[in-house]
Amino acid sequence: MPALFDPILLRDLQLDNRVVISPMCQYSADAGSASSWHAMHVGQLAQSGAGCLILEATGVAAAGRITKGCLGLYSDANERAFAALLESVRAWSAMPIGIQLAHAGRKASSQRLWQGDGPLAAAEGAWPCIAPSPEPYDEGWHRPEALDREGMKSVIGEFTQAVARAERLGFDLIEIHAAHGYLLSEFLSPLANQRADEYGGSLENRMRFPLEVAAAMRAAWPARRPMGARINATDWLQGGITVREAIAFAAALEEIGLDFVCVSSGGNSAAAKIPAVPGYQVALAAEIKAATGLAAMAVGLIVDPHQADEVVRSGGADMVAIGRTALDDPRWPWHAADSLGVPLDVAPQFARARPATWPGAAFRKGG
Ligand SMILES: Cc1cc2nc3c(=O)[nH]c(=O)nc-3n(C[C@H](O)[C@H](O)[C@H](O)COP(=O)(O)O)c2cc1C
Image 1 (cartoon, rainbow, N blue to C red):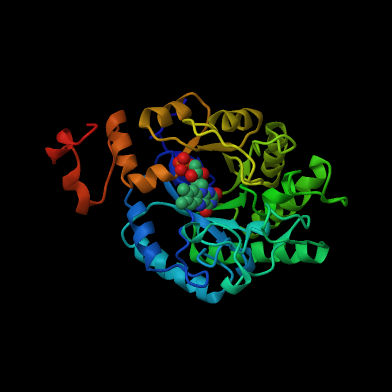
Image 2 (cartoon, rainbow, N blue to C red; image 1 turned 30 degrees about the horizontal axis):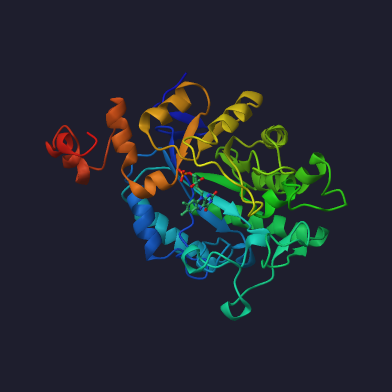
C-alpha cells in the first residue's frame, strides 16, 4: 500500500504527496471576486508542502453563493480576479491548485459565519433560492423555489460555463460540490428532495440531476485533467442518504468519468448530530473506495501525521484532506513529513527553518 508522502497520479496530474488542503469558505470575496485576503490565504497554503490545494466552494452563479462573501466564477470580473490570484501564487509555488464548484441551493443567501450564520434578512440583501423542493432548510430559513426542467437546464449551463472559465484559468483539478446540503446534495437526499417527478423518490431519480450536472461538467473539462466530487456518505439522520446509496452515486460518477470522490457527510438538516471523533468519516471513505474504482479522499478530524499515514497505508483512502488542521498549522505537511521521516522540498526562502539547518526545530513544543 502507498504511504502519505508517495505521489499519486490523477489523469495527467501528479500530486507529489497525498495531503490535500480541503476547500474552506473564507467569506472574503467581493461580488464573487477573490480579494487580497485570498492572496494571503492561498499564498501561505501554497507554501505548505501539501500535494494539492482545493479552493473554497465557488458559486457558479451569483445566486448560488452561500453568502455575499463567497467566491464565484460566473463573471468576467471573477475570472480576472482568479487570473491575478493564480499568477501571483504560481510565480512562487508549483503546487497543483483545484477549485470546488458549487451551487448553494436552499442554503444560499446566508449570513457569513461570523455575522450570524443564518438566512439573510431582506434588509441585508437576501435573494431568492432554488432547491429540488420548496422546503426550507430549517425553521426561519428561506423557502426555496422548486426547480423546473428549464431551471435545471440553466443551472447545468452555469456549471459548464464555470468549467470553461476554470479551464481558461488553468486550474489543475475540479471538485464538484455534491455534499453538505447544497443544491446537488439536496437532490440526492430524501431529507431535502420530496419531488414526485423523475427527479425525486427512488435513488435513481434523486441522482438524475446531479449526474446530469456531472456529465455536462466532465464533457466540458479537458480529458487530461482530473475531476472529482465531494459527496455525502450519510446525513447522520434517519431517512437521509445512506452509504449504500453513496456507493451507487459514486459508481455512477465513475461511469461518467470522474476520477475521485472526497467522502464527507451532513449539512442537509440542522437536526443532524455529527460525531466529533478523530477520522469520523474515514470508514465511509474506505467503504466507497472498496466498492468502486474511484480514488477516495478521506476528510474530517484528521489531525495527526501518523493517523493520516495510516489512513493511506491501510488502503482506507488514497488521499487525505485537511481543513482546520491546515488553518491551525499551515505548515502541517512539513511537520508531518518530519515526524514520518520523509524528506520534503520547501521554498528556498524558508529552507533555514528546516530541522537540518535550524537548531530551534529540536526545541519546538511537540518535537
Ligand atoms: C472555515 C471552514 C470553511 C469550510 N468551507 C468548505 C467549503 O467551501 N467546501 C467544503 O466542501 N467544505 C468546507 N468546509 C469543510 C472542510 O472542507 C472539511 O471537510 C471539514 O472542516 C472537516 O475537516 P477538518 O476536520 O480537517 O476541518 C469548511 C470548513 C471550515 C472549517
